[in-house]
Image (cartoon, rainbow, N blue to C red; front, top):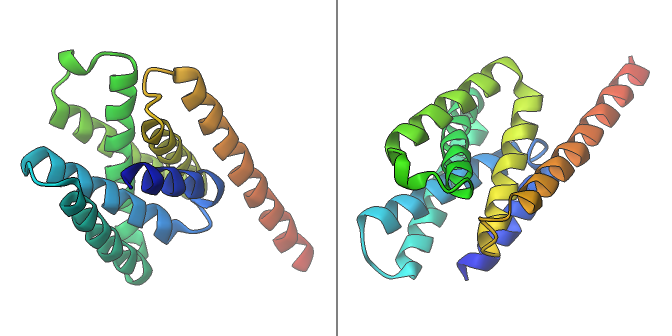
Length: 172
């Protein structure tokens, strides 16, 4: 079940993470809720999925009504998750302090979102989408697939952004 959720969320983030920013925020909430539940409570996977879904729904609602704050929190959560995934892909997780890596990645994510909003959302949603897809299919040790997915997500979303910008200029 989790594999399917990760694959669908990851694919959606790769293709439309910027356009559906609330989905990006919801996905970050889902991943954070799921990971916290599995890390601190040794219950069944179903409980972790439910907690993740609830957290994702709360974050999505939060994103709709408090967009700036929600995007900052999502940037933090996505940045932390992505940096942890990259550390694991490089085989360095046994040398790293997990929470410190998460915080560093989170700070990078917030900075990206603050200064380069559209491109930060494209980059972070592509990173998160690639990480989710790679994790869903247990390909964490295959950096090439991660990189291909990341580049594909940035290209697809970047092309959509440029197309929207061109349309707006024509309408002016």
